[in-house]
View (cartoon, one colour):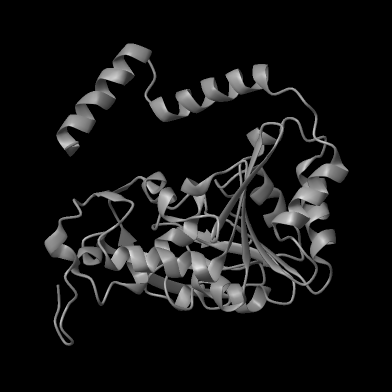
Length: 303
């Protein structure tokens, strides 16, 4: 489906439904329906065992992306859920979550230790913990606590691409992290974006998913300040298109009552995404993934 056709369909849906955010409306209606169907409370012991079975074990580095709306059958507050995860990982484990700022106006100073996130209530409560460290990045910052936290977040503001080498996302693979989606499925797995960064110099197509640059100033609560410039990502994605290429040897699905869960080790997950990218299998629908754009560049060539 072309961009023109998709835009026309979107405008028609907006007109019929009387709602500008069609996807948001559909998610709300889906959640309303699921609450009518899934009413079984989730026992904490059962939740803990399921999380253990999925890989939340002592000493592990755990990356969590979540949708707190889906936790309606779990009798825990967000702070209690975070405490549960940290208790399972123990003092030698590291917990990390996305902390993408709501306000990404590059004309303003990014207040690293104060800016709220749009990546969900669990992430926002986690960000507010004084023990948590946050990476400096206007579009894709990350919060972490534990022995590997510093390694994950310390160099994000030195990167040219938000998800590339030396970013927290690629470093998840280096520390053998386990990745969880809790109430948030495969389509929310941000490390999928590592592909366009890692293959940028190899596959011409991935030059097209970046358009211009972003430069901003940042400031920490301790008075530390700086500037950072990075490539701006563009395009339209459908991550679910890739799900069938990630079998149970890489991605595991589970469910308790309504709560969907997904688990994967970061290293094979990112490696598989890169292999697919080299074959021209991508989550992007815009720019159009034409086969000729996936012919590898010769050394020294530019796209």
